[in-house]
Figure 1 (cartoon, rainbow, N blue to C red):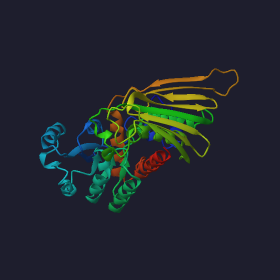
Figure 2 (cartoon, helix red, strand yellow):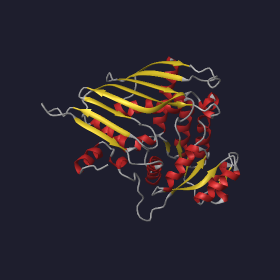
Figure 3 (cartoon, rainbow, N blue to C red):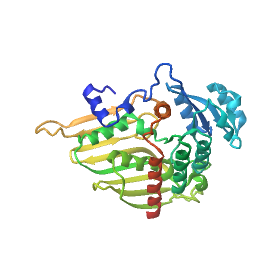
Figure 4 (cartoon, rainbow, N blue to C red):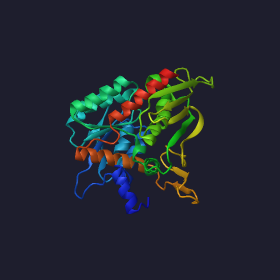
Length: 364
């Protein structure tokens, strides 16, 4: 990122410096790598496994799948022995597999709780995709199971470790923009009618659970506050059979303790590149794309505070490409496993979003 020593020092004071480094959890020379068993071999798992290939302290050592032939092809690609391939039924046998330290849960949302809890009982640390679960009670049970088993639980909020999002947070925390007044954000796409995410029993909710959670979570890490009030509305415009169990569109307004108001929207009915915009007393900041795997862009304009001086302008684009965000994520969790440290996006972070999404739906 081209940080000066002074800028790096300020990041260190905020606890963000390690997140901005090219490799978040670089392993020390000779240190062993954390072995991951990937549960579910869909699209998101592919991003993660490719990310692990670039990690300094992580490796793929096991797979869980309902399709043995597919698992064997992937196992050959990542050097996983056939003896470390499991079905969903016999997955618990990996308790005795010493090459597996942790799991990556990449299943549909409704399965997160079951496979997190089973993994914890088998003594494995858990990195679980977001949303954490489909209900608040499931999220609480996941946290309890991991604590009881004394294993780490991290929710895969990869943007908590992404440099441009962190830079946006830093500008706000440093007061460069002055007092934040409002935040606007949105994310969405035109959903495939055959996708599992359109089945509420599997997804738990509509676009809010899938892409709206990025907008909700961003409003929290940008403000550094927790919401105190929600209002929301839903709508379904396309009567094409896709939305029999869930809404097509949802928009919400959030009030934070400081008085900051944030609005968010998500949809399964239109291409809506993810973005957020922050408006403050000294200027503004925006990211768009803000939540994608690559191609992120940050722009800002704000007053320096000196009379007669021109505004400070920032126009920054990420040079990182997919799957580097997943590499950072794996680096961080592996570091937590190796050092017995609590992740920066633990189960409690996922639980908070579950509670807020429940409130949004209740309001709508």
